[in-house]
Length: 401
Image (cartoon, rainbow, N blue to C red; front, side, top):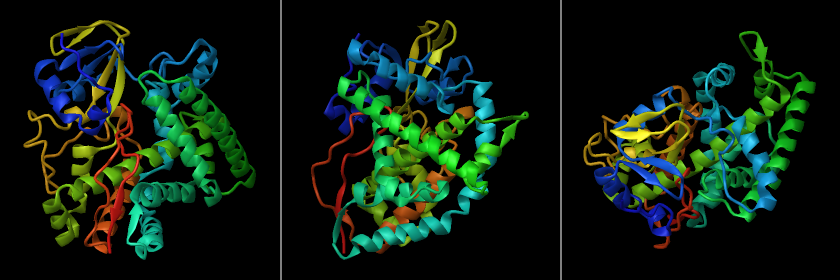
C-alpha cells in the first residue's frame, strides 16, 4: 500500500495533487499515523457524515499526543471538547441544537448586516491610507471578533485574548500528534477562557437583561434548560467557530481571487455575484478541511471493511475537488451554479453559524474588492497553518490604493 504524506508543508500548501491521487487509487485509505481511515470521494464523505451509524463522539479521544506528564492536562482538554455540540450525538445533540437554534435564528443573524457593514468600513478606513496591510491580522481576524463581541456584549479590550484562546483550541484540535507545548498552552488558555465565560454568563444573569447570553440561558427544550457551564461552553464554541472559520474563509477567498484575476475582475464588474462567489470559496478553498467520525459498528465504505470503533477522517476539501461531482473542480468559478459543497457540513451537524459566516464573508470580500480596485498580493511567500481540521494561512500581505 502506498503511503501518502498528509503532514508536510508541501501538502498543506498544495494538497490537491495528493488528494487527487488518493481519490483515484485509494479512496478509502488507512493512515497509520492518524490510526484512521481517510476518505477523499465526495459520495463516500457525504454519505458517511450523514449516516447515524457513524458517530461524532470520539469517546473523549479528540486530541492526542504529549508525554505522560501532560496526560492530565490533555484529559482536561478532551473532556471539555467532548461536551461540545459538534462532538455530541443525539439525544444530547438534539437538545443542544434546538436550544441554540431557537435563539440564534437566521433572522437574528441577518439583523447584524448593518453592524457588519459598519465594522467592515471601520477596518477599511484604518488601513486605506497605508496602501498595504496584513489581511489576516488587520482585517480577517478583527471583523468576526468585533461582530461576536457585539453579539455577546464583550468589551473590545478582551478581543485579543479571545483570539489567542480560539487559536490555541484549534491548534490542538487539528494536530495529529500534539506536542507538550501545544497541550500545555491549550490547557492554560482553556482554563482562562472557561473562567472568563463563566463570569460573563453570571454577570448577564444577574443583570436580567435581554442579552443573547440571557436568552440562551433562559431558553428551553422539552422543559429542560442549559446549566451555567453549558451556556458558557456554548458561547466558547460559537466564539471559536466564528473566529477561525470566518477569518480563514475571508482570507482564503481573497487569496483565491487574487490568484484568479479573471474571476476577481468578474466580481469587480458585477458585485451581485457575491452570493455564488462565497459558495464557490467554500468549495474551492473553504476553511473546514476535514471532519472526523467513528464507526459505531462493523460496516463498510466503498467496499472497504471498517471495524466498530475505528475513526474516519472525511477530507471535505478532497470531496469538494472530486471531478465525479463538480465540473472542472480545480477551476475557481464564482458563478458556479451546481455547487452543493461540503464546506459547511451536511445533515444534523450542518454548521449552525452558516448564516452569519456567509453574511460576514459576503460583506468583507465585496467591500475589499470594491474599495481597493487594484488589490494585489504583496508577497510571493505564503505559509499555511499545519492543521488537518482547519485550512488557513498564517499571514496574507496585500497592497492596494
